Length: 125
Image (tube, rainbow, N blue to C red; front, side, top):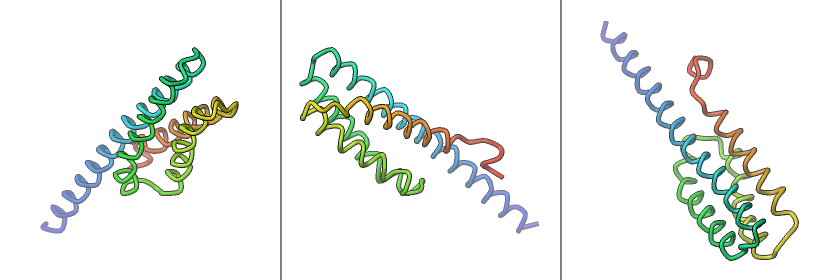
């Protein structure tokens, strides 16, 4: 009977950790997606300084989430987003034509990360 109680507690802890990580990743990826949209809107409207400042904020938001995410997620998924986040600031600063494609790629990768961490019955079992 004791083993059963311990097993139930462990299962509840695992489900709780999964819910917490799913909510955290969902929130951070949502901020990443909306931030990249804001960078593009500012850049395309001609406000290069505003786009640069928002890109710096976006990078710092990701850098603050990254240590927490590396505990919960596979680092290979995070490495590509790291590369894109750090590159966007320089693309805005350099007035590069690749900015839109990198922002779009960042949105798609964040959405894939968000979808991969969504808690479902299949992912629990």
